[in-house]
Length: 214
Ligand SMILES: NC(=O)c1ccc[n+]([C@@H]2O[C@H](COP(=O)([O-])OP(=O)(O)OC[C@H]3O[C@@H](n4cnc5c(N)ncnc54)[C@H](OP(=O)(O)O)[C@@H]3O)[C@@H](O)[C@H]2O)c1
Image (cartoon, rainbow, N blue to C red):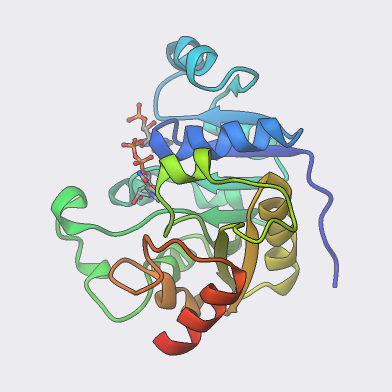
């Protein structure tokens, strides 16, 4: 088992969930670089207000200079990602497929988890799905210290065990209990429409809910 030492988090997307994770990461002592489809100059002021301490970057720099990259853009835009830039990187997929906002996208209208489709598009990335089942305001408001009996859990799933461990450590440091659901295919257990999605669960109740969904 090899946990990657993580100092810098790169986030693609400066909307609700991207900025919420960024605030938690900065509070936990990580350096954070954020990119959108706009130039760094265009998002600098927004970041100064929404995520003081985060650095506006191009996608290329946010990815290259980070130990973990978080996908916090609309899933409908996933084909705008550049697989070659993300090759070899630990990548957290926080995206959900929601046809009313994303539009109908045939490749996501299947039994497979959306993260499996994203992994196919990013074949050389070490993809871990997480954060997708928690509302952005809860990421901000419900983080709490390790050991608190009310601490909220975040499920993780991915095919690379070292990447899962690295992401689990990151999640723990920013204020949540990681619950390892297993392979990337298991991420369907906490996708949109499952009992886990949007539920307020601790580590133990999350583990039970995942079991019941199998
Ligand atoms: N909202 C929640 O509570 C929540 C919780 C968990 C997961 N999620 C999932 O997380 C994803 C983002 O949701 P959100 O609510 O944060 O959306 P949002 O508020 O609409 O923000 C989306 C962000 O992505 C950026 N973006 C668009 N295209 C991009 C690209 N090619 N590269 C980099 N950034 C790009 C947008 O900026 P520009 O358009 O200026 O580039 C914007 O900053 C969705 O898949 C959603 O299902 C949401």
